[in-house]
Image 1 (cartoon, rainbow, N blue to C red):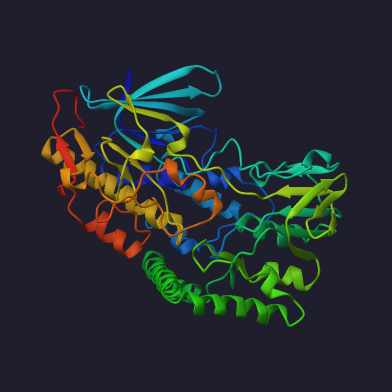
Image 2: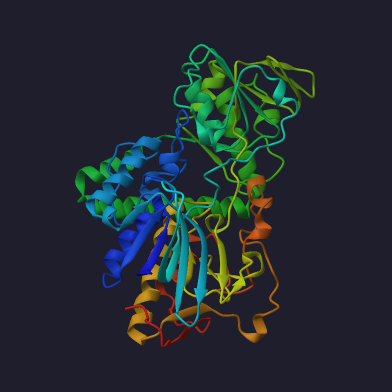
Length: 492
């Protein structure tokens, strides 16, 4: 059976970062990046809907090791994908990649100190197996094969086109058409102003409002720094500045939720004027950061609403008709195209099944180790970014930690690293893996994810500054990660 030291699952933003770090920090390790699709990029290759873009600035969504050089800090999907492709070319990572391999199962053997990873060859339909000593899951957090399908009464009666943003049909022509976008999250708020540039009219139908914040898509301070400083130094300073501001504002909003609420709603009211019903359409029933804020580059959604190229309706669907939707309040919305921006379907570790020494693993019964490992599960890490900051900040830290761990195992001649609860920790209070964050796409699946405990390292704090200490500075041998030698072929 083919054998490598490390298998990385996924060739998106996390998997590409993992490849760079393994190649740079642990160059004595052989590794393979397996990807279910036939191309790199993950989210940024899959999503093709109008206006697709980041909702984080690229100085923090970009990798720590590779400066973002484009003028716009809030970038479109095509630019982000090109950045990822450039990273792969620059560090010659494609030679480590194998495409069209969908991981379906992983089985750990203590006797062999190795995982046997089973994958489906998407081209031939055959099953393949590769053995590795360490398994690094970078497959993302949502199902690539289907989006969340909300209950839409009477949708079968609609006579027009119905599409989900996750599977945008390239041939769809919406110019001059009436478009109804159902949803109030980042995807809906991205699509509405983008489609309003060509459509006859776009209506966004939401059950409840979401907090929004308008920001320029160009960071003028960053551009000035880039003109006078070397690229890497400028990037480091901009990244530090933006990360600090993110954490500062997030902390203040959580500490003073009523003031934050008033400020966010007030900014929308100021932009929209006295005739717009801000209370109905942009005043959520929860406090800021109980769910993620939606970023509006240059206030584009508000501009589309002011210019009447788009309309927002806050109501529940009574039923679809052949020509559109009738709401609970009796309003009729006519449409030629309906876009169901109803969210993602979360998955744990890419939908694969796992077992340890023949016993199935139920990750919902484990405790998280630093937000990237699982109690009692050896030689396994997962990359999952922040919900309150840029994904890559956490992804980079996770990659650094995995390399530190592998290097420690090499230096101590150990083959197995297992997050292990002490006897006194077996009955720790359980908290949700991501605590205090309540969007539906999270809450409906949190029971399938590991729990947090009540002290480090059994935490997933969603705090970059704290994670820098946990991942980059804390000892690898911390008393909770146990190390074991093996008579089997160990990680070289």
